[in-house]
Amino acid sequence: MTQAVPATSSSADAPLVPPQARTGVDLLADHDQKGLLRFLTCGSVDDGKSTLIGRLLHDTKRVFEDQVAALSRDSRKFGTQGDALDLALLVDGLEAEREQGITIDVAYRFFATEARKFIVADTPGHEQYTRNMATGASTSDLAIILIDARKGVLQQTRRHSFIVSLLGIRHVVVAVNKMDLVGNSAEVFDAIATEYRAFAGGFGFESLQVIPMSALTGDNVSAPSVAMPWYEGPSLLGHLENVEVNADAASGPFRMPVQWVNRPNLDFRGYAGTIVSGSVRPGDSVAVAGSGRMATVSRIAAMGGDLEEAVAGDAVTLTFAEEIDVSRGDVLCPPDLRPEVADRLGAHVIWMGDEPLMPGRRYVLKAGRRATSARVTRIVHGIDVNTLKEDPADSLSLNEIGFCELSLAAPVAFDPYEVSRDMGAFVLIDPLSNQTVGAGMIWRSLRKADNIHRQAFDVDRAARAELAGQTPRVLWFTGLSGAGKSTVANLVEQKLHERGRLTFLLDGDNVRHGLNRDLGFSEEDRVENIRRVGEVAKLFTEAGLIVLVSFISPFRSDRKMARDLFSDGEFVEIHVDTPLAVAETRDPKGLYRKARAGEIRDFTGIDSPYEAPEEAELVLDTVSRSAEQLAADVIRYLGL
Image 1 (cartoon, rainbow, N blue to C red):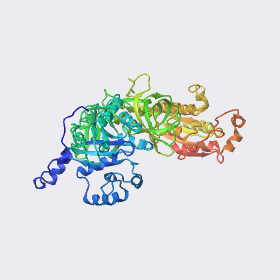
Image 2 (image 1 turned 135 degrees about the vertical axis):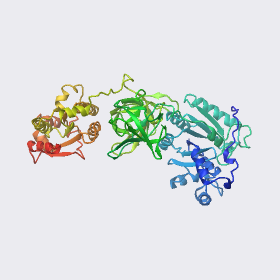
Image 3 (image 1 turned 90 degrees about the vertical axis):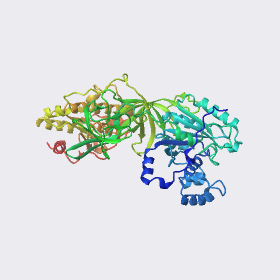
């Protein structure tokens, strides 16, 4: 038998206060004061997830008369219960779901009792929709994992339990459903409960409640069941009303990702966002996680007026006593409790794309409000969700999970996912289709030292630029080999030098003789080539220089990776546009001839593509205009 838990009566059956005794304002005030529990249901196909949610909605009086009438009609057309109401149809809203009797999309529903408010996510059971289940789990505090009493613990049960654990859900209810179909047998229930507890023992759940029930008949859903007198624990709703899931977000260190720099007029500058952990008060010192710049909070502006304190979950606008550089995506934090900032990460990844994850491919990584180009450099191992065994893996297919190493174009601020779900989560986006193809949980940075933070200095970029009397910029010349990039860049630098401007020219061939001498011409090495040059160019702009970069840089994603290192207006992409046929006739180094002969592999324009810029700031036509004229065009663009 299972361990007895004191019964908890559900407030769904509590007597209602007479309407005349309370006003609508009183009721709304009470409603606002109730706590909110977000939970999801998951399990295998036909375990009864939608029926369970329908039962909860029905028993908590969240179904109106017209909905009951519509449900009655739909039950006759799509239902599986004969003339009886099929409560699953309250949740299965897609026609395909009703026709097949399964859940496909994630369906969210709201209901409330006298004790608590709830948002429930009904997630799919089919393996092909496991990515949908992960979406529903990402914002949930508790998971209800359904098990069909006739089938016991299945592979999908193990998969969902592992994903629930991986996504940081620490409170689980195992609902052993359809007990009426096994004669409400205590022996069947105990066998399932014992097997599940043995399997889930290493997941680190803070609470695990196993409840026998029948969603169809309502036994042990909203109130204790008379059909199973041997079970002395709480009903499902009773447990949901009383389980403590309060995270330690309010007591953690202050974290606020900046969503928007608020400048309604010249006299106000604020930084808007939602506090994800900790608290802040006027007079507190805060720092920008990435740069280390510090400021003092002068005001906390909110919808109803200024606040004396803001805590986790509050959406506020902070103003500072000092002027510092803060942009969208930056994370505000205490100066002495800063999150890690890294551009190389180790993370668990749940793959959601139809095309497999392959190391070396470029994606957009979005963590909080920060987005940057990223590559999976290595899949350390895949994870067998049935045995939790770590197996070698060269790729991850749809719904597979692995531990990966990632290299980012720009560093992101994070706390490990096990410490903060808000600060440790990210998604991977396909840059071509813009579809989310992966969800990740950051485990650690891959730097050799975890105590490295950027040091802020008083002599900064602005001071150096003022001393030089110029606006630092990067002029990024891109085009085919032989297009004339270096020729035009050289002329532009001469003209800038004549005008008293401080410059530096980074040429592709020259850089490969020194800084990048260890790199070849594979796709991975080309990405690293551009990453290093972008970082060097950024350092030169920090020194106040105008930097000219002359690189083929054939891939749009690589050029975007470089652009993302700079503020708006600092990166000027210049496409030196020359047709391949013309470039081949020039061929000053004889490279095209060798590539055509097969002596050089992966040569841009021959057996490796060149992706022309789609929105370059300048396009230089080298066929109709001379290099001198094109250089003059660049100078005019700069307004010099």
